[in-house]
Length: 221
Ligand SMILES: NC(=O)c1ccc[n+]([C@@H]2O[C@H](COP(=O)([O-])OP(=O)(O)OC[C@H]3O[C@@H](n4cnc5c(N)ncnc54)[C@H](OP(=O)(O)O)[C@@H]3O)[C@@H](O)[C@H]2O)c1
Picture 1 (cartoon, protein in one colour):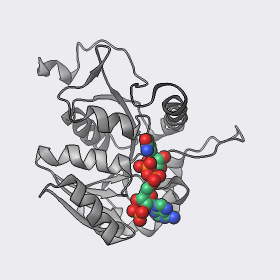
Picture 2 (tube, rainbow, N blue to C red):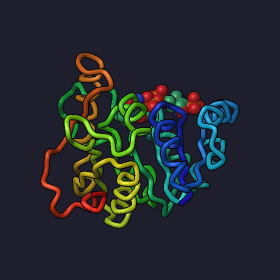
Picture 3 (cartoon, helix red, strand yellow):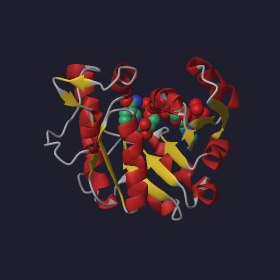
Picture 4 (cartoon, protein in one colour):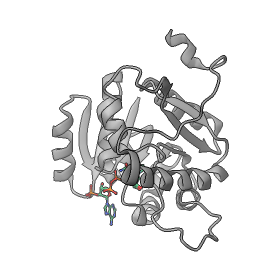
């Protein structure tokens, strides 16, 4: 699969580096192609190339989208045409929701800005430092549990595609239904940020404990 990575932050690097060995082709985009090249050099995989945001968005059948959150809606709007029809993984977390009155998530605002895209909120609850630490391990577990990766979106096929990309990394996809649940996931993302900074660093996950009877992960054993 071709995966575009819009953004050069630690989330983008952790996922690009760990999807590359699964025979995906990836293109990482930055506002500065030189910065994207420098990031690609740290991954050192022939599967990963560099470009700007537009190049990365155009390249991918799936586009992983994680940038400075205050710019996430306006930047998505600029990529509107090139993202049409694509599965877009929105991992962005809102910075400020202090009014307590918000009912509209950042994910829904991004979806409004790119109405043709098949948007899935995912990977916003796990911390980049956790992914960086655990993804190179095979089948990473913490206290006997796989790491939950929540995802939600209005397009069932897009959610399935994202779930498969999550499972490839031996993480546990938790399907949270339609995009209205992005609001709760963004709140969890903020909680995860607090727990990382104030309590546990990289060594934690906000997990769903569940029976695996019908889980595709059964086939791992
Ligand atoms: N870090 C985590 O643990 C974590 C976990 C979950 C979710 N997230 C979310 O993932 C997103 C990325 O976070 P991050 O910590 O990986 O990196 P970050 O430092 O927040 O963002 C880095 C990216 O944002 C871009 N950027 C900065 N200012 C911009 C602007 N004005 N317009 C357009 N792009 C701009 C940078 O572009 P250049 O490449 O051009 O420099 C870079 O690609 C955020 O929304 C964050 O909430 C982060």
